[in-house]
Image (tube, rainbow, N blue to C red):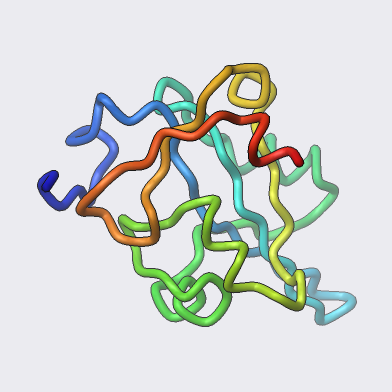
Amino acid sequence: MQDVMYQIEVAKDITQLEQLLQCEQVAEKVKRHFLVVVSDEKQINLNFLSECLDVKRLSFASPQRLEKYLDTAPGSVSILGVVNDPEGLVEVIIDQDVWQSETLQCHPLVNTSTLVMKLSDLAT
């Protein structure tokens, strides 16, 4: 069993980092949630991502939102969490470098193990 990992610095062998981001469109009073998948070699620039998505006030989700929308906790966020979002409230964004890779490593909704999957299996 692998040690529990709470920070990407501890998990350098993990090639992807998933984060649930939330934004609030103040004028519309609508909250949108994004699951952003990038390699561990990249940092998420919230200002740039906000501009690309044409949203304001983009921030990392609270533990309560992670639980509510993906049924997971900080440190265990995974693209697999979208199975816990049957209403499709979380929008998934996968970085181009990750999308073009052959495999994806992610937590199976707990941070004590890691799965390696063919990306083509996720796309179908």
